Amino acid sequence: MIGDARRVLIPRSQIAERVRELGARIASDLQSLSAATGESVVRWDDTGSPEPVDPGAEVVMIPILTGALVFTADLIRAIPLRMSIHTVAVSSYPGAATQSVGATIRGDVPRGLTGKHVIVVDDILDTGRTLAAIRDAILEQRPASLKICVLLRKERRRDSEVEADYVGFDIPDAFVVGYGLDFDGLYRNLPEILSLEEAEG
Image (cartoon, rainbow, N blue to C red; front, top):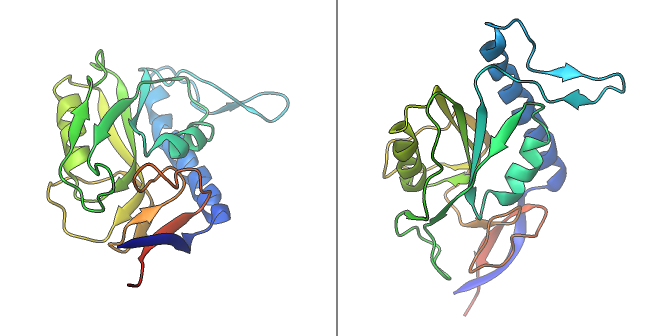
């Protein structure tokens, strides 16, 4: 029986710092995309704020709902690029389940990705089934590039061969909630990453 979320694995301050680092790294990696035009991807205005810059080919961020919603909202504000955002919904933990039963894509994968730089954003790399399904569907459209960014990566064997290009934190193979991750629809609004503990009795 699942109890309450009590043990904090990653505090909010650490999450915020790491998200800023990930955003800076993604922006830096995309810097090379503007080499042909000689324009810097990251540009700052007179007040020291970042301005969106065209990196050459269009950048498309694809968050996987609903778990990546909070992570993506913070991440994109740390990436000063001109980009579009298109979501995709996937179900892998139905109801009160704590074990993935496989990825089911609900709705269509965004279209029109040919020749674009695509970054898929997910909350957690667990079995790998969800990201493998999304990756394969996107690659069929022949994007210019495809990168995967995850907030969390579980230390476990994957059911599907998939690697993340950007990883926030490596965590043990435990069921976690908070910062967008849920259990039976609850806990998404918690600002930290917490583990669900087994209730006694």
